[in-house]
Length: 122
Image (cartoon, rainbow, N blue to C red; front, side, top):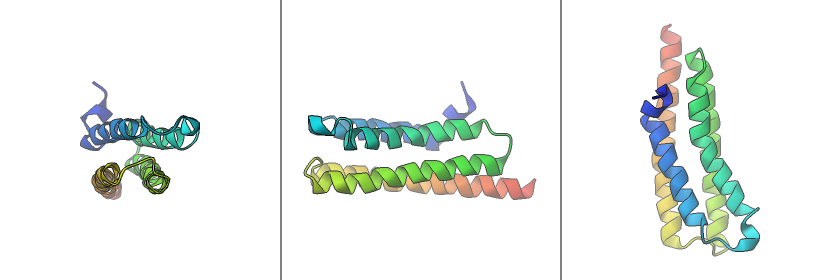
């Protein structure tokens, strides 16, 4: 098992990506290389940055990757508004995605704060 697999934040990021894939599955075909692709890539980027960051040799460096993961999360949230406004996401799907994003955001924020604190203590 790789060390990042033990992180609850990474596990949640995988679940979040699964949710994004599920809700974008029924987006219109013309959006396959547009909003669908952007949302999916941003969602996958969250767990990918956590995995890559965990390999860094310093806590502040890992924290920077968590910050990048947060940016990807925010991209998905912004894109979700567009998806809802365009009628690609139902209100229920939007609420589900938004709620999951809030949870993921809190976890990322907590992880980053913890990493920065550990970096200061060293």
